Image (cartoon, rainbow, N blue to C red; front, side):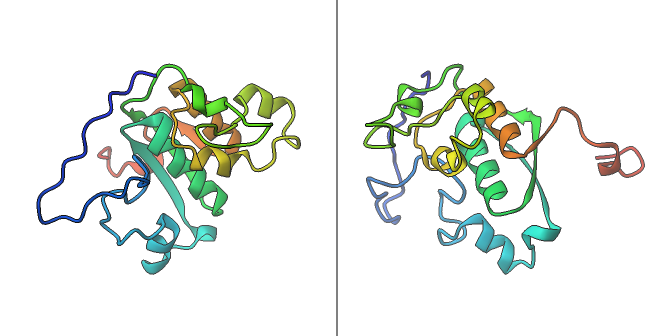
Length: 168
């Protein structure tokens, strides 16, 4: 839905990229040894009960959505800085909502629409993990709706208490 897959080229001294390696997500360049975000934060003394994350990024309907959902599922408070989002497809990829016998499957993430989740939240329990694990794009508007439904606060400007003497 608007993404152009770039060939994966790595320096000669880097190990090859596994075929099943996600094309997005936290630590996709292995800066932290492939540890999940929650483990990296815990190693640095940040616990879900006393940490609020503010998320911004490049592909709003993939890595930003995944990061926000993973943080919320892990119990963190998450805020998404909407002016800091710089990309995403306009429409969801077909794989995003496709199901195989009502379940996720090959090339089928089976994520219900935000409208359907809002109407029947109990019927769609667990959608956050399904969405976070999907390798397809949700579409920008849907991504913002999913993040809000999961409990993220969408920020459209820098909060006043984040400024010191008028400086960010």
